[in-house]
Image (cartoon, rainbow, N blue to C red; front, side, top):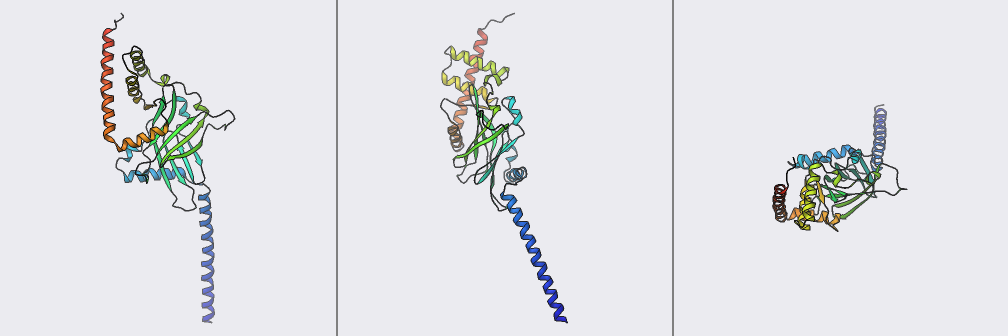
Length: 289
């Protein structure tokens, strides 16, 4: 009798273990499939990435903040929007005026996630907004931080009718990414001059006048113009300069701080010369009553 009850007890225990094991396997499998198919909580993952950087870097609370919005007012429509792009291996989440992150497609829970960059500044020509630069990404095995160039393109008439979308992501150099974003909003952003305030326009008019009167060389004019645009978070593209040139020079500057300081000293000296020219012009102009 005792043997019969013992066998019955063992049978019940085995049945419970097998049933529980099947149920557990099913739940784990479903969870893995959901994760693999892209059902990722990107917002939660991004917050975790930023929090990790805050904990590991005392200055992260300052450096990880994107700069305040600047640029054509029409782009305010994209201020709080994020866009997803996927290739065979990764998802990319692009928040235009905040940050860009990368998320590995994986069936495993601990898949790879990284901050590729935090938005820092525009790069422009004298009549066009060209691209945005994202810096301070997570550390890379190449010994530097990840960074991204976000290039803006006007789509063709027969392309997507969405407000905006990511059309391409390329790793142009190790841990340096070029991302192309398209939107009808980018088709007519107006010229750069029209987006400056009155003070900026007056300063630009002044150096144009000095340049046209041969009081400033082309090199000095370009340097002064850059000093004006610095006040608006805008960096000037030189003739023939590409976004690849920008990111490679930026990476080299971080390795050569002394050369960068020399450039800053030269800009300070040229600003002083501009102030002297301004004072000279003001003294020569008759005051109208």
